[in-house]
Length: 169
Image 1 (cartoon, rainbow, N blue to C red):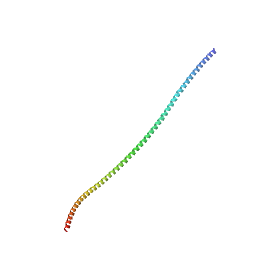
Image 2 (cartoon, rainbow, N blue to C red):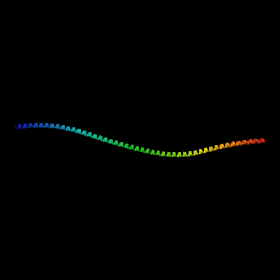
Image 3 (tube, rainbow, N blue to C red):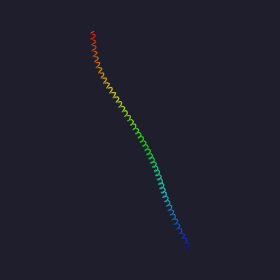
Image 4 (tube, rainbow, N blue to C red):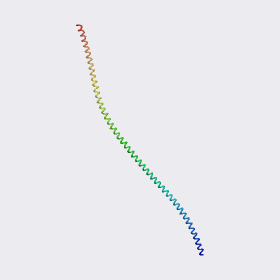
């Protein structure tokens, strides 16, 4: 009976060991599956982290590129503003120079106009003098013609008298 009890215990022990081994094997399989599942999840998490890091790097590069682009645009704008300001200053100086040149030309033109008026007055006076002289000469010419006509008449009278006196002699 003792042996049988020991055999029964041994059989039960074997059954318990077999069940334990089977349970341990199932637990190990489940653990392996759990480990695999955890590894897959860890791989997904790692891939997601890698994607996030790549995205952050891309965003950082894009932000840096955008910042550089903004700096370049700002620099171009400043250079453009400087060029426009320089062009405006040059145009302003050119306008001031042109204004001074115009004022100078206007002064010269006014002086030339005054000189021309003065010359015109002198010419007008000379013309009036010439007219007066011409009138005077015309009057003198008429007087001389009249005087010549009188002298001719007197000469004719004298010639007739001379002719009469010659005949008388």
